Amino acid sequence: MNSDSKTIHPIWLRLNHWVNLLALTILVLSGWRIYNAAPIFAFSFPGQIVLGDWLGGALLWHFAAMWLLFFNGLIYLFLNIVTGRFKTRFFPLRPRDLLHDFTAALKGKLTHDTPSEYNAVQKLAYLFVIADVILLVLSGLVVWKSVQFPLLRDLMGDYDNARIVHFCAMAALLAFAAIHVVMVALVPRTLLMMIRGR
Amino acid sequence: MKKDFDKAIVIQEALKELPSSARRLFMKRAVTLGGLSLLSGCAVTDKDSAERMLRKISTLNDDFQAWLFDPNKLAPTYPESMITRPVPFNAFYDRDEIPEIDESDFLLEVSGLVADKHSWPLQELYQLPQTDQVTRHICVEGWSAIGKWGGVTFSTFLKRIGADLTAKYVGFKCEDDYYTSIDMPTALHAQTLLAFTYDGRILPPEYGYPMKLRMPTKLGYKNPKHIAAIFVTNTNPGGYWEDKGYNWFGGI
Image 1 (cartoon, rainbow over the protein chains, first blue to last red):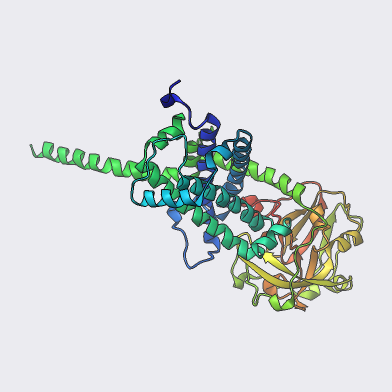
Image 2 (cartoon, chains in turn purple, green):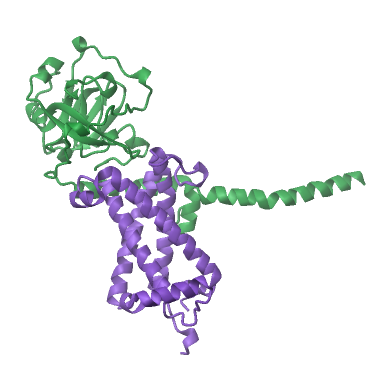
């Protein structure tokens, strides 16, 4: 096998990625409808783009898709750790490399010559979004079950605050998604890699 | 000649119209239940079967919550200084439809798997040992409010009426035609109160006079107001909002 045909993303990772996209899309769109029932800030999400005809429908979607996200996420973390992929793809992550790659990216000079390796900015972005989804799950647990998870509730600063954390983590996820999609548009090969593996 | 010309225009217009309406249709479908199920590749082709699937998952979520529920875990209590003033009025109807109940002809009915089925006048209920608590009320909509409710611990009342404590459910019928039901473990939770007072005064009409079931371990819609009848059963009686699609367990 030459380097061109070598699989960069194993099949489990690709499946995991697209299931994750599906779960998060349902969760975000239904989450907007749930938010609209009692907005935290001075705005609501337009009714045409939310998922769920009414609050009850949105809640059904949200509490179904959460299991998809949860189990898919567990599989992702488990396989990443046991295959050693987590260690080899994301580390080492040095501040010096980060500064260098970030500057190069701003100048449009960051190359993707070795698709088998993430550059430092990618490493940080992906680690960030993993942490952000974990925060979404933990803050979501407090919004859902503030009595059953007292330690998490205290960490989030009680129920009302957990809603704000949950919302902000969603906004951070969308910010990541926006940049992620722009990057994929700039380097379309990465999209093919996430579909066929190489 | 004119006819052909008209026809051409019509076809031209139709063609122009087609992509945009097809686009609209696609967008419309993409955000509906059916559209997402198509996206997921499940064998779900219409809104009804998507709804059935989601309700099934909601029932599984009931079981999960019953498993997660710890009867010994208490909801946080707050100092009186943190009470939300005023606690919002919330019902499936407007203020002007709040039921007007007269103490003199009110009787609480008790039925089902209980030994003592006599009806209770309010004064007799007030004789039971009273307690109060300042807890957070969380609405399914997302807002919350801290309030002070007082009354008899519900487990005390259930024991007093000789309820079968191994039964699965306790159901409630209300003066405003609301109805709901809860699981027995939550009914026996130390903070589950049959509440007659709010903030030290007899429960005002908007908060559920003459009594409401107050559970800081369940969402607002599980806390029935204007209770007229209580029954113990092994058949799930459902609930007003639950039958429309809210999760039955509704635990916090």
